[in-house]
Image (tube, rainbow, N blue to C red):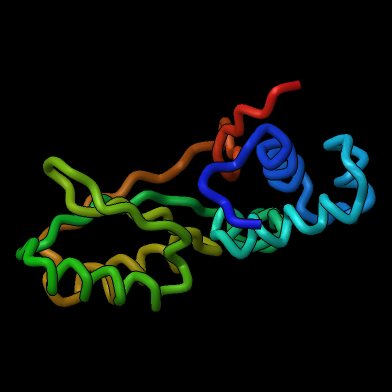
Length: 159
């Protein structure tokens, strides 16, 4: 099955899997109201086409001892493409950085970081992030509480 854009059934499959990626194919098929064999074929085709990038467990950071979430706003000395890519490669090597976005405007990147405590976060910021090549400025903001964390994207699957 070749995909250009997901149809209504595909969107139902995507929405259901985004909500619960652990359900069996039989459960998924029942939920999207098709039989199991075509459901599995569609799911595999959606994976192959790149609409489904992977399956992940949603872990509780606090339960695992990560009590601090912070956002780091990073300005670089140079925005040359090679320098931007080098910084992105460095970010991928830092386990405390859980997501990174390149931005337009005054700040070049925003990093979402998790740490076990303020000391671990401070050490990361001062010893690794600010010391990294091409980093000109770092401003941080501590998260007080999480009001919404909805992974994925909104799927406009018809009911």
